[in-house]
Amino acid sequence: MSNYPTLYILRHGETEWNLANRLQGHFDSRLTETGRAQAAAQNAILRRCNLSDFSALSSPQGRALITAQIALDGLGIDVATDAQLAEIGIGAWAGENREVLLRQTPAARDSYDLYEHAPEGEGFAALYQRCHAFLDSLTGPHVLVTHGITSRMLRLILLGRDLAVLRDMQGGQGVVFHLEGGQQKRLTL
Image 1 (cartoon, helix red, strand yellow):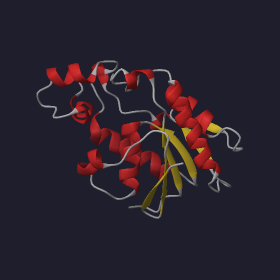
Image 2: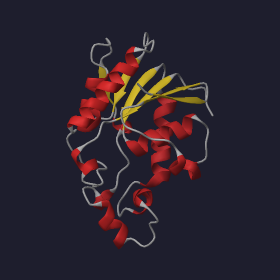
Image 3: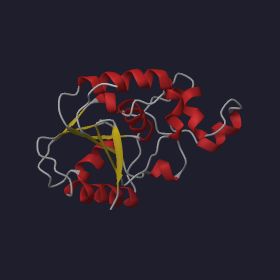
Image 4: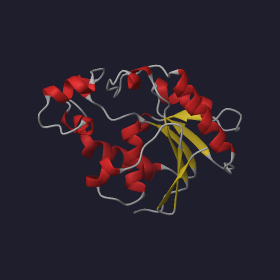
């Protein structure tokens, strides 16, 4: 485990495709009203944090960037984008319904496994390498706005955990994960 800077990691708010149980990957779907409210909750959480000397990076995907704009509104931090924060690529399965894919994919025990089995997908090992390279490039404290699987992978690396426990990493929309000194704290309203 390297000596990483202090980070706040956010997942985008709920999207229309989250509600429809569709995989998004590199495709995009608009935030729902609930998703916008979750981003506003993240803003309220971040207002309680000392963010002086922090920078902000977001996935360039619309759902994350809109969340970042809402979550950081009024905090005096400009949001830049970094493609390394994009969601795990799921190739040919982007936009498809999870339940349908699970019925068609006997090797997948649950929807989590779909990310590893997606034809032309990125897979967890490649996502691990991408996230590790990204974290190694950070030079100071940041607020990061990303996606469900990518957030879990970043936090797994920051906590020095094995890839085998990725599915056990806590998630959530409308919350903020504070990572510092190899420790994680889940912040809520």
